[in-house]
Length: 134
Image 1 (cartoon, rainbow, N blue to C red):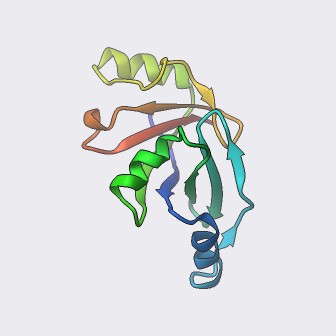
Image 2 (image 1 turned 90 degrees about the vertical axis):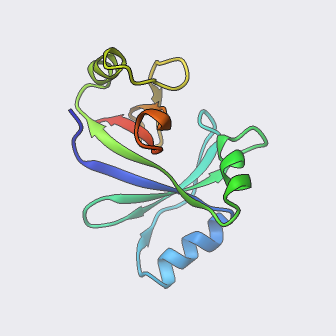
């Protein structure tokens, strides 16, 4: 059901510093920051030959990233995102197998302009999983 690894998301306490580190120390192609108000984050995508890294920074006081950074002040891996062909079919299959879909269970539009869902980390070995329809 899952396809390619779309990205690994890293929550960061300083988006500018993290972007610059990837750009200069690692020589990566770093995109511009983009606000995602529906998700409460500002994101920067780092393009790699085989996938992407998504830097996450809180957007507003109610950002879900705030709690993560309080527990992990230096930042850290926040989630992994896998591609799926049909997000509704994937959701229904996962729910039928006992997995919990976060939020309302209805896809939201993600940073790439495509439908996304998040799956409860307790159902996936402590890892928050994002599914993105391609």
